[in-house]
Image (cartoon, rainbow, N blue to C red; front, side):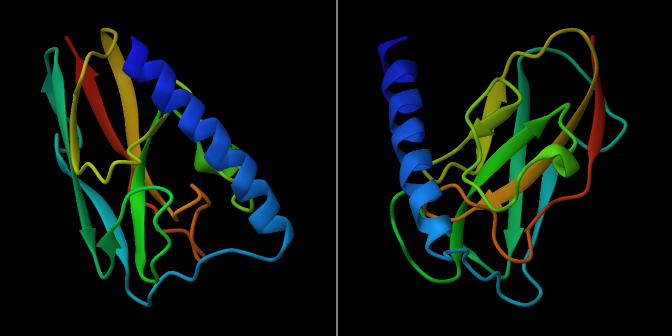
Length: 145
């Protein structure tokens, strides 16, 4: 619990920095051909808890949040979230539906409620701001038993 609160506070602080950076015209360029995808689970899979989600990335490197390095970013997992509702000019908020992996993680094992869920990856730069253009995976739909 303490670790979750510290992580949330760090994300909130990064979002403040991101707002200032974006106001100064900051938005990291995505390398041409960069792509993200969900390796597991496969689209249409029926799974049980806990669900292991494995991230794929090509054409870019992974770097933790707050480490500014060209051609890198870190994953954000969108759960039941339409990216069209997000402001791609701002740092992504940390919520139950927008899960940050600012440590550079490339997979997670997570409890999800029973039912159908959509999963999608969105890469963010060192300040959690999506790249230009956004590096966004295809949607994977799963059913949790």
